[in-house]
Image 1 (cartoon, rainbow, N blue to C red):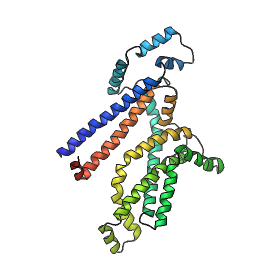
Image 2 (image 1 turned 180 degrees about the horizontal axis):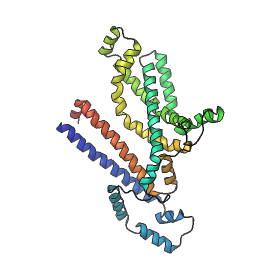
Image 3 (image 1 turned 60 degrees about the horizontal axis):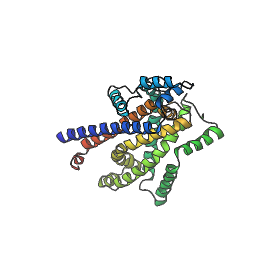
Image 4 (image 1 turned 90 degrees about the horizontal axis):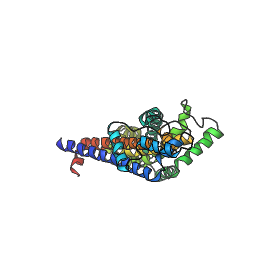
Length: 312
């Protein structure tokens, strides 16, 4: 028990370090590459500011202070849960993210669910089959995984929206607008997961308890679904961090391609508009969710598989 608590403690410290590193690197990169923040803020108003107005804005926002002082104020704000105010939208960053989080969460949830479902179906149907079946499946997965997300989305748009006219091409209203974005998001993830699950399933299908199940007269589908499949959940859980990273990166592309609301599109607009507080807020949120997922998986595996506690 003490070893588990010690591992959890160090994992939490590592998670905090990752979040701090993400915020620090983004803060440094944006301050190094962006123009005068005061000019950016005043430029949103559509007028050319005078030197006096610029000086007043720098003083009001603290840009006339040393960069280290600005960095310290930012970290103090994070500790209080204050991510600042969006320079472009003129509202708190937390409010802007909260308004768009639901759309991205909906896309990510259904995309992840479809990806896992497709991966399980593909692995169950092709594992330990004839050589040509496995080769065809692996080749198809490799091709689909190699296609860039935006190219895959454009192909789906050309076929199902512009040619067949079955589904809408853009928008966020109605369940039909979710279908193409979900499929576009799910396919690259599903192809990678399917390969991992197939290898794990083929290993499990050679185990003695599977041979005994077949000897009892169980059908092949019952052996695969009722006995073998549940033993592949460990690698699936371990890959949850990979799934989330792909969901987040895919959301940025998909929400812009299909003109959907969400955090990905909010991030793109913030980068294009040099909206430093918004970029920092979204980056920190992504890092936080990522480390939480990986920390949870690590702790879960530590508890579920005691031998991992002694591998350090």
